[in-house]
Image (cartoon, rainbow, N blue to C red; front, side, top):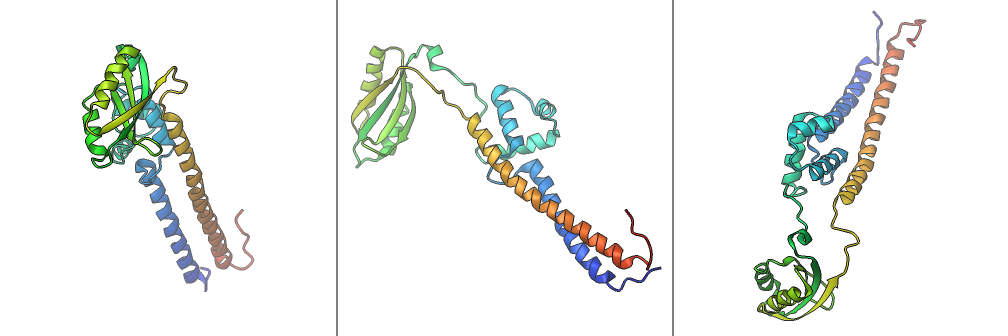
Length: 232
């Protein structure tokens, strides 16, 4: 049997790098299942797109469509819900199909003494008010509202300005919606950004793998009997 004077040192180096590589591999495999980072990856994006297209799809069917384990889909869903990425599975409703064909954006000026919250609480009692935002600029709050007709819009405006704390408002009527509310392009962009980061982490694993090969070659060189041919 060949004697390797450097065997202990090489073995120690080999085990250290192998343990680091194993840890990276375990972390990588864990992230495939749960993705604990603050970003989303390609699998998250694919799952979100599938749910957006088919909200009633089950976990088992989603796993078949995405070609991943059922447990992976469930873990990803739980993670996305816990982080607030997925906030619901409700249907998208078009107000125009309900008869509310007029959309308007209303800027409110309010009394600063009372603050925004009391005004917002009163606005939530008006069904035609779909969104309310606190804004910068000349106004204090921005509302997106709908109405059945322009005449009906006046009724909605009267209800809004009657809210305690509202001083005055200005209204912009939407003539056409050029870009509807959308989120999937942003989901894809976030996943693509995560993919670039993941490529860098994968490169680190590849470098560790290469280092292991180098040490393995060194071990064979030291341990091979004199004159013995090297394995191809």
